[in-house]
Image 1 (tube, rainbow, N blue to C red):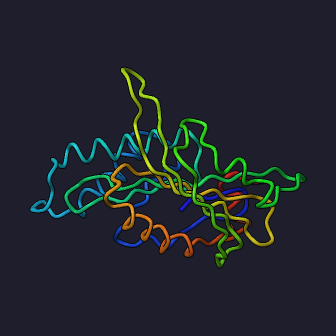
Image 2: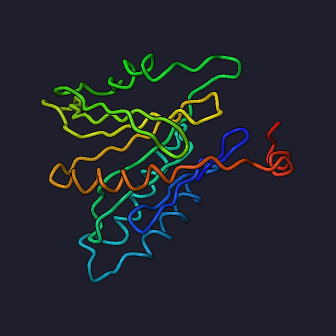
Image 3: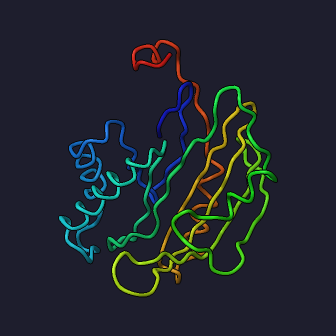
Amino acid sequence: MQEDDDYIVDFDFCGDWFGLTLRDGTREEAERLAAEYVAQFNPLHLRVSKDALQRQLVQIALNAFESGPVVVAVAYTEGGTLLADLVVYVYGEDGVRRPSPQEYLPKLVKWSYAEVKGEPLVAEVELPVGPAVRVQAMLAQKRRFGWGSKLSESLRYAVWPTGREEILLVEVDWQHFERTDEIVGLVAELVPTMRLVPTAPDVQSLRGHH
């Protein structure tokens, strides 16, 4: 979980997901979170070394922190293969009307870092926290070196929380296409558990919120 100015964005993360949200963004913090996750794996089932798994988790946490998400999480197989990574961003400004789902849709079906292959799947859904638009697409990202593109799949939920001025964007990415149905199912179970927990005024003051 992580906090905005006056609320915390939280989910009911179960055994399939592990939170990698960093508060301070330090390597020490990332190492601690990664170690907690690695300790949950059964060594008899792991197909990678614990050290390699630890390094990958640390890198994911640190890289994600740079883009400013309020929530970061990952899902792995019991063998230590990354299934999917999840990030949540908050968009909005005080006093500025947030766009409607119809107005925001053109942005939702475009990815700044990749080309969309084919036609995205778009659907409107109702979540406990508010209405949302769900977009699923196949992406082709140019490789930094060499030829060709790296294919991946992405699932977005843009959420309009009731009574708020912000839009929450949940984005999940993966490359194991043979497990798409499984990953989509995990996300479909997780997203409805999203909730905004008000931050107590005294806690805000202690943490420097005004």
